[in-house]
Length: 468
Ligand SMILES: *Cc1c(COP(=O)(O)O)cnc(C)c1O
Image 1 (tube, helix red, strand yellow):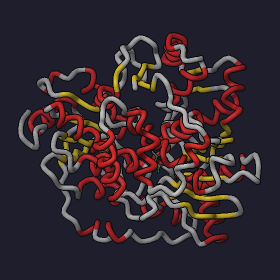
Image 2 (cartoon, protein in one colour):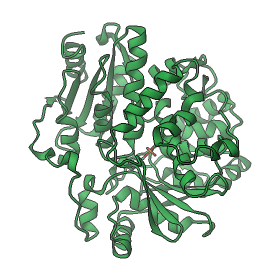
Image 3 (cartoon, protein in one colour):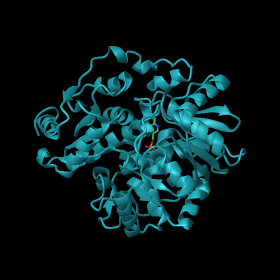
Image 4 (cartoon, helix red, strand yellow):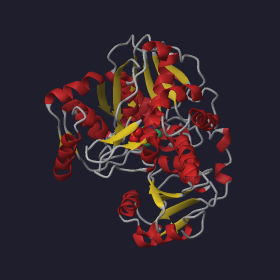
């Protein structure tokens, strides 16, 4: 499989190189040159497979030529064996023809584990083969950092540095990162905010001299392997609800458009999906595009669903690429315009094309809490605020009652007790494997909000705690 850039000017790469690359050299994102397509008969034949075997069938074409079947099978089996539910991604019925797909049974209790548990293992496999070591740097306001650290903790060839804003993440989220001890795990609390952390990661990619030749790898949501891993659970859900013989609708709590873009790819690979609902919080740039063809940058509004607090949506470019007939130069023009003006809209017929599949809703904090309360009252289920936004959007935007509606349950409610308590619901307990989280030893270094200080720290510790 070869991968091409959404901006048309970077060289095509194979899977292995895409895994290690961040942005393409022209500033674009990598997408498969040709998407695999499965027949309805083939998809139907996968019914009843264990999750890791389904994952093998769905993702095999994407890694072809880079990872052998035997190795890939083994990696996938190990990846999903660490999930706390034997179904890996169980479906729970909420209402007539309405289900939540629970994606929070991984080690850090959010859907990001599906991709990052795999990414860590893929990186280690490829690096082992090449005899290479890499450094990962990332910034987090919560979920991504812990999932990335959990995914990389067993990697022999990776040192991971995750920066979070000092005293600005919840105790559960901080401890999910800082209690993972290993000489290749480096938690940095920055005396600044999340944007300061992110800016330092960006600046480090732009000027890598401090790494003395060691390759820097990104694990943010633009990484192709993360999108790829998320395609699988759309197939998994559909197969349990009568697909592919019938169509399924999905409602997806959305921030950077990675998770829902995986659903869009599943449909283009042959899975009958009749509707994809973009569910956002008040940070609603995607809702403004879907409802009115206006992708206009706004300020950041902190919300009770912080994992969806974004100003621009980094994977949206991948959809724009398809909407423009995969013309990379047209996409580059459009995004240059957006960079200059903060505004973007597409030609009417392209927007109409998108609207055939996508609907959207923006849900504020008040409606989020009301939905948590509503669902708790009706079913006894406690939703996290992100999932609650998905449920609200599913109920308001649904096209056909006869089509099964699946809401992606993106996080466990215990991670976001503030919203749950505001809804008047008692937050649930930590699951067994995290029950002693608050007693575990923490390791973290507090650093000044200063790029030089951070880069010195990385170069002094980037080789399993020793200097690069
Ligand atoms: C990351 C995240 C999202 C948003 O997913 P995107 O792929 O960025 O759209 C939603 N909910 C939770 C809990 C998350 O951690």
